[in-house]
Image 1: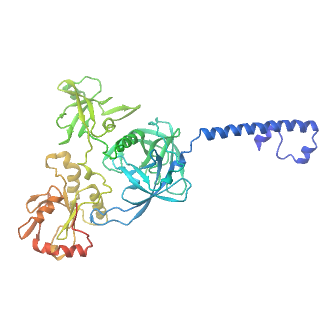
Image 2: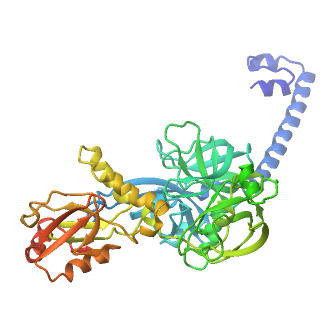
Image 3: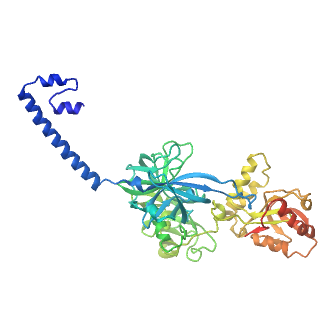
Length: 524
C-alpha cells in the first residue's frame, strides 16, 4: 500500500472516493496518466519476471523424493533371529539413467522401500540397485517407469568453497512436506563415516541443519548438487556433514560396469615425519615433505614394492607434507584421499625416498575386505553353527555391539576385553598370530546335554578337538570328523576348556533346533 501511494504522488488509502471525485478534471487527468504508466510498468515487470522465472530459475525440489523404508536387522548374538520390522524415513533425488541416489544407511536391511514424489500422495515401490556401504551411497530403481515422468535429473557440481552457501533439501523428522535449510560450508576434510564404522573419507561440514530424515537428500549450490546429506554429531548444534562430489563421482564411475568394487586401499599405514633428527637420520631434504611407511599389511599389493622406513614424498599428483596431508582443491586433507580417488585395480604412482635417494614406484590398489569384521556389516545374514546347544559365530563389531547391549542390561562382561583386543588390536600388535576369522561361543542354549557348562557366552574359541580354529568351517569340521567319545572345546587366553558327550550331543541336535525354533544348524 505504501508503494502504491508513492507512485500516485502521495495518494493515501485513507482518501475516500468522494474526496477524489471532488478533484478538478486536470488533477484527475494527471492521476489517470500516471496510473496508466504505472500499470504498463507492472505489466512489463511482470512479463520480464515471468520470462526469467520460466527460462532460468530451477526447481530442484521437484526432483527430491521422500523414502520410507521398512527394515529388519539380525540379532548377532542369536544369529538365526531378526529384530522386529521397523519403519525409517530418508530422502533421495533423481539422477541420470532414471535412477535415484540416497545414502546406503537409509536402505540397509530393507524389507520394503517406498518412494514418494514432490507433492504426490502416491507411494511407489523401489529396490536397491547398488549400495556402497563404505562410502554410504546407494542407487535405487523404481519398478514403475512412469514415476520418472516429468522429473528432471539433478546435475552434479564441484567441491564447494569454504565459507560459501549451500542449501539442503529433504524430508526430515517433524513434518511431512519437503524442508529447506541454508548454511555455510565450515570445513572440508577426511572424517569418519558412521555407517561403515571403520572408514574415513572426504566430507564437508556445514551449519545447515541436517536432521534424521535429511539423510540422502541433495545439498545444492547454484542449482547443482554439491553433496549428499548423511550424518551429524550427537550433542553438537549447527553441525552437519555431507558427502561431496569427488566421493559421489568415484562411486558412480565404479558402478558403471555393473558392479561395485569399493573404495581402494594400498595396505599401508603412514606416520608423520616432522622430527628433525629423524629426518636427518634418513638424509631427507629440509623441505617439510614426506611421511614414513610405518606398517605394511601382509599380502597387500605394497608388500613386495614398499619397505618399512620408506618415505612417501608424493602420491599421484599430490606432494605429501611431513604431517601426512596433501593440498586438494585449496584444502589441506589427509594423504589417504590421493589413494581413494583411484579405482580398484589401478596403479598409484609414488615418489619414494629410500636409502638416501629418490625412486618411483607404481603400487596397484584394491578393496580390502580382511577387516570387514571390524566394521559394520549390512545386508548379509550372520554366519553361525549350532552343535549340542553351543552357538558359534564369527567375532565382529556387530556381535560385540549386541553383546555389550546385553552387558548393559546387567549380564556378565567377562571376556569382553579379550574379544575387543582380538578384533581391533591384535592385527596391529601381533599380525603373525591373527586368525582368518576368529570364532566366539555366542550362547549356550540350555539343554541336558550341556547342563553343567560354566561358560555360557562371549568366549573366544581357540581349539576344538585339538584343531586350531581359524574360521567357522573349522568348527564344523572339528565336530563332524570327531571319532572320540567326547568333544573338547578350548577357549582363548583364559585357557579354560569344556567338554561334551559327542553321541549325546548328536542325538540332542534335532530336539534343540526344534525347542529354540532354529531353522537349520548352520548359516554359512
